[in-house]
Structure formats: structure tokens, C-alpha cells
Amino acid sequence: MTSINTVKIADEECHKVSLPAVMTIAGSDSSGGAGIEADLKTFSAHGVYGLTCITALTAQNTKGVDSIQFTTSDHIRNILKMNCDDLVLGYSKSAPLKIIKTGMLTSQALKVIPEFLPLFAEYNIRLVVDPVMISTSGSKLMDEESMKLCLDSLIKNAYLVTPNYDEAVELFKLSSDAKMEQEINSLDDLVQFVARLQEQLQCDNILVKGGHIPFDKDGNVAKGGNHTTIVDVLYESRTKQVTLFESKYIASEDTHGTGCTLASAISSNLAKGAALTKAILASIEYVHRAMQSLTKLGHGNGPLNHNIKVYDLDHESTVSVNTTYYEYFKLHPQVNDHWSTYTSHKFVEKLATNDLPFDQFLYFLKQDYYYLINYAYVHEIAAKLAPTEELKQAQLKIMDEINAELQNHKKKLSTQYQIDYDSKDLDSQLNPGPACLAYCDYLLNITKTEDFIGIKVAVAPCLHGYKEAGSFGQNVRRNYDTLKLGKLNSIDESNIYSSWLQDYSSEWYEEAHKTGINTLQTILEMQPLSQSRLHQLTEIFRKVTQLEIAFWDEVLTM
Image (cartoon, rainbow, N blue to C red):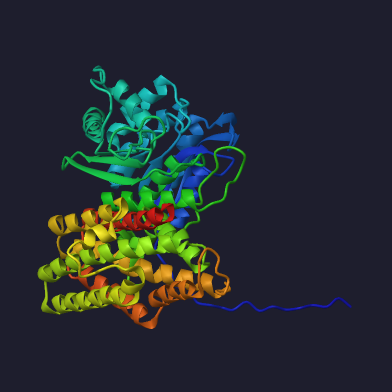
């Protein structure tokens, strides 16, 4: 007799939610990385309901498009009618459909969509137009007649248009009899161009994506592969406001679907009620993390990871209750890679395995003492700027701890290394190197240009990074036989390495680490932070993290 197993499914009551809806009018990508498929994945990731109007079926993969079958005008009209009948008409309150997002549009679609624009306007359904005219590889995807049709019928009615730079140039040529008067060589040139383009297009807002025009470290358009920075430029016509979304250049060929995904993420966030700048900021972050969190799929330009966690819309302006500002800074896409390099640095790993020559460690100790003198001064300035008596007293306590650490240097090392710490000629004995001087100069400049909050963010990577690096080093050393001297000369030197790691993984330093996190949280919660201010603070945290890396990099080259 056949054995039968019965499995009872729990009858769990679910809480019902109301989902805003977004409709994408675009082509289908059979490989799943772009077009309708990317749009729907992005909508679901962001918690909105997605509808579709497929303008074309493609046979393609990550290496390219083989063939396309276009949807007829009559069928497109019927799709739009059916969707609007169901999710626009007949609602006493606001209709579920909030945003229409367009991607690759055919001439058949462009002839039909204008028929529905009055209905969209009547129900306050905003139009986000991603003018898919030129691919990431530079190929034209639309003939000039279709481009002109898109310009005349859709773009002028759009709430937001999101061209990449090459598409923006084509749109300018189509919309203006005037030639571009100058080349784009700098960020100022790009901002002026975007403002002029909006004036020509007459859309409400325009976001020109900067992936096709990266900048170098000096803020000029990158030449010769010196790419460091991407800047997406938003121009809002009603307020004449320009917002620059600056991010790290990601060197990757796996960018299939980035434009579709970004426009769909923005549409999702707008549908949920986010302000435009916040919707864009959260969407750019989502795309960047999606680009970096998937091993390669396919043999060509690979897709993104649309399943990456979507941060709460308040992520950029206020940290959620489950996330501290410290975690926000170190996990930020512009910081995270640097933070990992810093807190698991080769210097610490070599020290933990006795693979660091002791003369290099001695060089580090001299640099560290010089740095601590300046570090103490920065905290002294912070104490003077502290907004409350409680925070001032906390600063004074930190200064006491730094002075204790300076005394620890003297006690452990002065006799062994013959450094006269009380000498007037101490600087020449310590001989600070370029990395140490650059780090100190940056912190001293922060005391002149920043407020109390800025200074506290600037000193945070030192306190917290050494805690994480100390724990990393201790874990490495636990699996290492410290009797093996490696590049050391004596067991005493090995013991000094052990002692250094123990200091930064000790209970007292753990307590200082926790106190620092709580203090930073308290300070940053004292007043609302604008997105631009939070961006500035993140940049300070990133810069100091890089200076910490350079500090240890230099030690390893000595």
C-alpha cells in the first residue's frame, strides 16, 4: 500500500497592505537584465505593484540583440486602455496608478501614448521618461524620426526625464537649432549644459546621468582612463535648483540594465510619496549596490542584482532605529570598500603573524605618537565647540584617555628606542612622514572649517577603526604560533606585537568604542540633518578612512 504523509499548512493571518502602482511602457528583454523584466524586479524590490505595456519582444542575451518583434499600435492602445480602466478610472479617492515609466519606445507606441496623456494629467499620474535612445555601448536604439516624436509628444509632458549624457546631447541637438557652444570639460560646464537642456525640452525636471562622462580626482572630465567620480545632475525647473549626486566610479562591464533599473527605482520611490531628490538619491544607491553585489552572469555585459535589499526612504536623511550613524557611515557605498581595507589592513595582518619587521613597527610608533599629539589638539578644539556642558565634559574625558595613551607610549618605548619625548627637538626625532603629515593637516584644517559635528565625524574612524582592526588582528594571531619569530629578532618583540593587539581588542577599548558610537549618535540626533549635510559628513568619514589606510600603507613601504 502506498504511504501517505499529510502536511498541514499553518493558517496564519496576514496583515493587508496598500501598494501604489507603477506602469512601465517598454520593451521586453528576454535575458531578464533590462527592459520590462528589470522594471518589474525593481518594482517588487521597492514594494510597489507593477503593470506592463510591452512595446516589443526581443531575442537577446548579455552579448547583444538578435531580433525584435514590435507590438502593433492597436494592441498597445488596448493594453493601456485595459490597465487604465482597472487601476485609474472608477476610484472615489486617489487612483492606485501613480507613475507611468517609459523605456524603449517604438514608433507604434509613440503614436498611441499621447492619446492617454489627458487622462494621466486629470488623475495626477506623473510621467517618468527614460529616453532609451542610445545604449550603454553607444549604439543608437531609435531613429531620428522616433526621437523627434518622443521629444514632441512625451518629454514636454514629463515630470522627470532621465537621459544618459550621450542621449542628453542628442536631445539638445533635436530640440535646438543652436549648436553646443562649448565642450564639457568640467562639472560647471555640465551643470550649465543640463540647465540649458531643460529650457529646451520644457519638461518639469531632468536628471542627466553621468556614467558616460566620468570625472577625475581634480573635478575635470576624465581622460585616459583616470575615472574616479560619477556625477548625476538634477535640474528642477520650478525652483531652478541644481542637485549633484556624486558617487564613486565603478569600473565594471556588467552594467546591463542600469538605466532601466534607475528610472524604475525612482518611479517606485515617487509612487510611495518620496520627494524627488530623496527618490533619486535612494535609487542611485540601490543601483550602485546592485552593480557590486552579483557575481557575473552571462558571457557579455552582465546584469545587476535586483534582489539587493532596498533601504528605507529615510536612510539618507535620518538613520533608522535599527542602524547607528556609525554603521551608516562605514557601510555607505562610498566608504564600505575603504573601511574593509582599513580594518583588515595588511599592516595588522603582518603584525599578527610576526611578518612585520620591527624597524617598520618602530617607524609606525613614532608616526603614531606625532599623530596623537595632533589628535589631542583636535579634541581640545572640539571641547571648546561642544554645544552642551555634558558633551564638553565628555571631550575632556577623551583628552585624558589620549594623554594616558601618550604616556603609555613613553612608558613602554622611550628607553628601548632611545626617544627623548621631552626634547624640544621631538619632531626631528619622530620624523613624521608624508602620510602622517597629510593626515594631521587634514584634521587641523577640519578644526578651522567644520563645526562640532564635523570634527566628531572626522575623529571617529581612528577610534572605531582601531577597535575593528585590533579584533581582526587578534583573530589572526590566535591561529598563529607566536613562538615563531618570523621577521622579528626576539620573543620580546613578539610580545610587544601581542600587547599592541590586546590593547585595541581589550575590554577598556571596547567600552571606549561603544561610548564613541553612542556619543556620535546623540550628537547627530540633536538636530535634523539635510541630505547635503549628511553627504558632507559621509565624505569626511570617507576621506579620513583613506588617510588611515595611507598611514599604514606608508609603514609597509619603509
